Length: 147
Image (cartoon, rainbow, N blue to C red; front, top):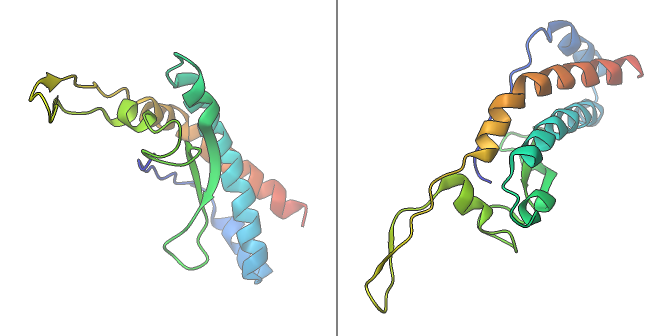
């Protein structure tokens, strides 16, 4: 889904100083990727729990993926359906998340259904982002201590 959420991890000053001492951008990025993936897995588990389950296809299609950062050297993790918004076999998950307006059929001019938004992904993120931030902090600390 294209919905975005940001997690702010507080109390990272000492960890950031440790990272600066590493110096190597590739190693720093590896530590952050590992930590962000651990946090994203918590959001993923909550999203799967809240996903609509008529057939279970949407639940099975939810994945944690590395995304592209707009900033050089940035790290992004995504929880999304396999192919993303409005794509793949579970394209309809975006309709469920965002809802739709009333539509008109082209041939008949008949008004057809409106899908009311079921914000399962947004609600999952809101419910789990504090736990995810704690997991990111913990994983990053463990990763740095093992170095």
